[in-house]
Length: 209
Image (cartoon, rainbow, N blue to C red):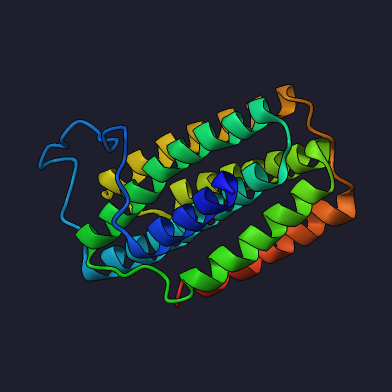
């Protein structure tokens, strides 16, 4: 019963509460006037759209980890999922804070994204811990590649967003490594392809809505 209540609590806090980070938001040294300019309206709009996509990714991460923790019977693995989810909560808080700073809004479809990700995480968990871990590895590796792409697309002068994305990328890579060490299975290529297609659809829609 506790695990079900915890899953419900995570959903409510993710979708309706202001997220609280355990770690301070990543920053960079304050650029000089010679090396930095205020963001233009076009650059602010681009950064806002990219950070909205990243925020959606963190909404989905909360759903995935919550579902996988609910599905596993392994207490140590449940603890691993829970700890990773806490780090993802930092990402959720940072991206939401940056959206506010940019004058941008979160995706209007966050409840839909959460429900879909929770269903996928629960399905992966029901297929066994090795498959669930493999699903986690593939997800985190795709997110890492996606964040790497965002580092090339974010405006050069948006130092705040770039610092956040860089830290997120490092954390996602570590989560994938930890899942591999825990015994993750390698997912079949068609499944990996379907996951990439679903992620592409989500990021394309979330960029605008």
